[in-house]
Every structure is written in structure tokens, then in C-alpha cells.
Length: 287
Image (cartoon, rainbow, N blue to C red; front, side, top):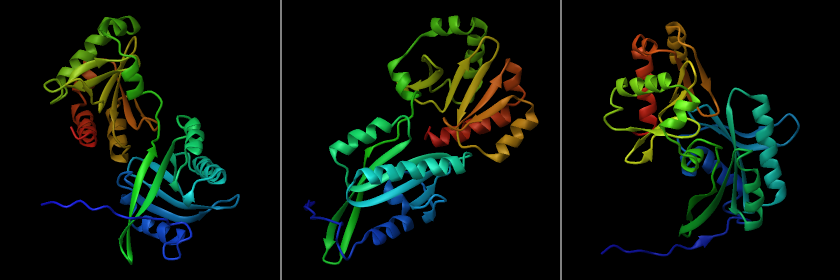
């Protein structure tokens, strides 16, 4: 019969065996323990030009860098300010990357959680609590719990709050451009068979069984359609798109390629590169 046991929680602050340096070293060597995806540890105790050191700097494969601050015990105002300050310094020094501040503490009190929440949505910020559970007299296990996630204004939140219909987009764009969206939707391999178009206030996305799966979305204008494909920027794709002659740009905030389609020939003549991008996006969304 399976057995469930209760594990004893261990306080880390002031514990001579598990100092902040020891915990920091373990996280740096095992970044996946944070549960923030496939992170690569870049720097530890990174010195800042104006003074101070970032506890840890990590990155993922989506061009995002994480400025991570660790504090044992309860979080405090200076810890919050320091976390935001280091995030601000790094984003100004390295504007080509997306940046996210991460604050880790044993206890993030309700008061300071409220303060942090005020910044979220304006400052990309993740708050995590770390708990130490006793495994044996000489071993502990660390558990990280995300208590405040990074908020991205718009996208799925706007989609959930502001659904629209086809008539809305025919007035906002034109029936001709809506017809172009229909044709693109039907021609993209493996999309029309599984998904339906979902009309939202800011874009036309995809849904399967009523659940949004926006690895591709469309934004019709008066004379063309933006086809948005969500995947990490890649130099090889950039080169292929430039060679194709298509108008495009990469939106770092939403991490998506924006490809301008004026008419169906733009897609038909460049199926290989566009469909390759879509395949990468589908893998990212586990489609």
C-alpha cells in the first residue's frame, strides 16, 4: 500500500549548514529547480557599474534574461528595491534582450506581496517562495513555489475579456482581408482540420475545443494582413525571410514573427519558410 509521510520544514535563515551562498550555488548549478523552463545559468554575483551584485543571471532560449535575487527569511523593502534596480540596470545595458526580475525568499508576506503586485504588469516580475524540507539529518530538499507570475498585458487576458465576432473585423478591416485570412487559415497544413478561428478585439486567433492555441494569429488591416507566428527569433529564419522579399519584423515583447501578407501569392510563393516557422511555433505550443 502506498504510504504518505509528513516532511519537516527547516528554516534556512541563520542555519549554519545551509547559508545563502550554499543555496545560491545549488540553484545556479541546477536552474531547472526553479520551474521557469530550460534556463542557462550565465553569471553569479555579477557586479553592477553603480555598485552591488546580481545574485544570479540566467537566460532561456527565447531571448529572455532573468535577474534573480535570493533572500533567506522574510522578504523586505530593500530586497524588492534591489531586485527592481538590478533588472532596470540590465535592461538598459542590454536592450536587445527581454528582461524579467525574479525575487526569491523563504517567506513573501502579504504586505509585500501587495506591494509587488502593484509593479506587476508594468515591471515583468516573478515572486517565488523557497521551502526547505528535511530528508534526513544531513539532507534537505528545496521546493520553489511561484506566488506571483509575470503578467503580460493583453494577449490571452484581453482575449478572455474582449471576444468579438467576424462582423467586428469586417468593419475594422475589410471583407477582402477577412477572405484572405480565411484562405490562409485553410491553406496552412494541419490547421483548419484541428482548429477554428477565434475573433478577439486585438487579433484573430486559433482555438481547439474552445481553448485558445495562438501559435499563429492574424491581424487584418485595410490592405494587408499581419500573420503573427510565435517562436524564438532565429538568424537563419531572418535570412530566409529577407531573401523571400516578404515584409516582416520580430516583436520581442510578444516573441513572435510578424509577416505581412498582401495577397495569397505572398504565402503561396513562400510556403516553405512560412510553414517552417509555423512548425517551430507548433512545437513550442505542444500542438
